[in-house]
Length: 225
Image (cartoon, rainbow, N blue to C red; front, side, top):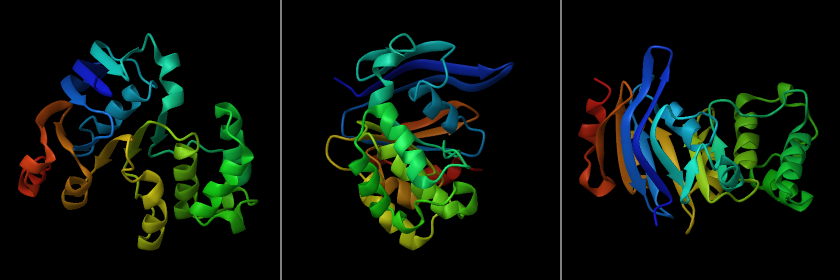
């Protein structure tokens, strides 16, 4: 059974249609990479899959649960890393992760383990507002994987990260067995390297949906013209 099954998904903001008739299927353990220019609907798609937005038309199933009706059964199985870190600026990295650990009934040892993994243990007691954007992004990565989600939704996950930090977070948001991922990307080469399936969006409409092995970087570049 597919991890994701989307049929005719549409979502609008007022009169502007952000997504129009999007359909896709993704098996468990696969990675879908979504390409498209700014405003194409990539982030809206992630927010629907994360149960943060309701679709206005179509059917969305995550792990065979229908959204939004069964969102309660999906949320604990999903991790979201978006443009906003979903962290409290006045709290420290430790306090932020411990708060989310309590929500997911995760032990404090997991918090310490992840702070070590993203090389933030030495700065864990400082308020987030005093940290660089790259450091905050590392903490946001730790938050997204804290509860070991089965579905990981990643919106430009390397934003604000230098090459060393990208290497640090790779084991956390890479493609381990049995973890399904949806990644929004502007990087044709890097995105294709991670993808099993490619979805191209332009103005909310799907223009490309194929196995990654059948997609050339030039086709992705065409989305941005």
